[in-house]
Every structure is written in C-alpha cells, then in structure tokens.
Length: 264
Image (cartoon, rainbow, N blue to C red; front, side):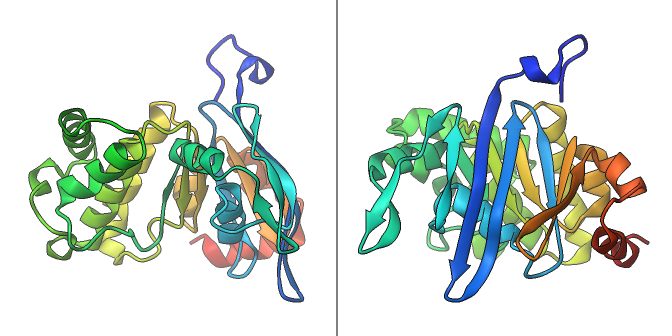
C-alpha cells in the first residue's frame, strides 16, 4: 500500500510473476497467470477448489515446476531450463537462495514433530542462512514473542493446538527475514475457534507493511487487510482489483456467484 504522497509506481516491485502455465498430465491447471506485487502489498488470492490458487503459489517458489512463464524476485529472474525434457531450474543454489527470501506458510503447518518449537524456528536460520546458534535463537525467541507463543518455546508441536502450531510456522517464516511471504490457505486446517488468533497475527503483519500473497477463503481478511485481490477460475484470473471495489461490484459472473456463496 502506497504511503501518503507516494504513487504506486514509485514503490519498488518485490515480486513479478509473468504468464505462469502448469499442467498435470492433460489437465491444464494454470493457463497464463501474471501478478505484480510491490513492496508492502497484501494480495489476496481467491477462488473455488480446483481453480489453481495453491498450484500458482507453489509455482512461484518452485515447489511445483511451471511449464512456462517467469518469476522475478526484486528483479532477479529465476533461471529455468530443461532436464529430461521437463522444465527445471538451471541453478539450484539460486533457487535455494530465493526460496529463503520467499517464505511460505502451509495449510498443514509442516513443523518437525521431533523438534521443539524453538528448534523448529532456528533450524532453517542455521542451515540455510548460516546464522550461528546464538543469533538464530535470539531471532527465534523474538519472532515467537511477536506471534504470541514465546511460552511454548520448549514444547513439541504435538503439545500445541492447531492455531499455536500455525503461529509457530509463521514465526519460522518471519525468522528468515523474507522479502515476500506466501500463505497457502493458512487457516483452512484449523478449527473455527482457532482461526481468529492466526488471522490477527496476519493482520498485524499486513499493518506493519509486510509484502504478502495470501491464498484464502477468509473474505473478511481479504476485504480488510489486502490492498489487491485476484479471483481465479479454471486457471485464469477472472477478476481483480482493490478488494472492496471488486467485492462490491464484481465484473465476473462467476465471482458474483462465488461471493454469494461465501459472504454471510
């Protein structure tokens, strides 16, 4: 979101994704999706099941290899080639480095069950960023405090609620000092009473100016916290724009139907 007196065009582009296509067998999941996120943007990505939302997010950090298209982080192009006739990065060190700057928060938390909360948040700092244990521990403790689970530092994931585990996963992502945070339906695996504690953390991150792409079904969060919205349908961007405007006056009939089924 542009600061007062600053036009959007003056804000540096954090992430640029151009015409991403992805098929699984004969099924075309993504048919050429593009997105530009400037620093401090919060972009909500909506769509019904099977619309390609999660696949799109996973293609951005190459957890899925796109068939075609380009991804640039802070202007740096992820270099792609072929391996065995299939798309593949030409420089895995570059991919590892860029992934560390594109922190992802998953639906299912993906915490190491045999590690304490503190170790979960320090491990990638040490092994990916090369931080010493003291520095990584200090960072981890600060991020755990930020998301409200500092008192769980010595617990194991199985001892936490789903909401607490997801907050630990967010702390782990934050500890990497990412340029962009990717959230793949971060509340979809939570019991309803635990959703708000995670959404509060995400709203706080949005308010402090984090650059975030959020695949979500949480319409209130999309409307209040995001400054741009994409609605995907059958692998294409069917509607997009400022959330309040798009939700009040959808151009797409499919999005209108989606909203009528989602909004109470």
